[in-house]
Image (cartoon, rainbow, N blue to C red):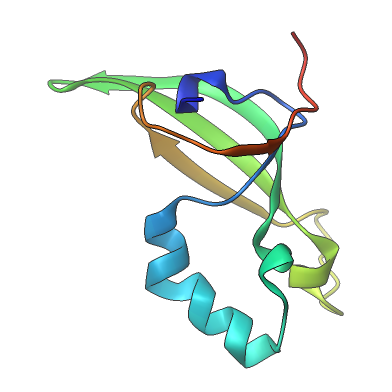
Length: 98
């Protein structure tokens, strides 16, 4: 699968760069399992293209395990990232619209 195949409702891992830069450290600090990294895709859109081409923009909802006891009065916590449409991506569970 590729980034352009991601649909709303799918279960995905965040981009590897985000995991490597800060999320793996946060897992250790929070003493959480790898499964806490999983995101449920809330929104997928086309990003503004640049001179290298198109972008797929994905907004994913963090797991309850990741958020822990933090109460967010504004609703869920989200991670927004962008990838080139052709970027290889592992979709762990399809839940999106066809």
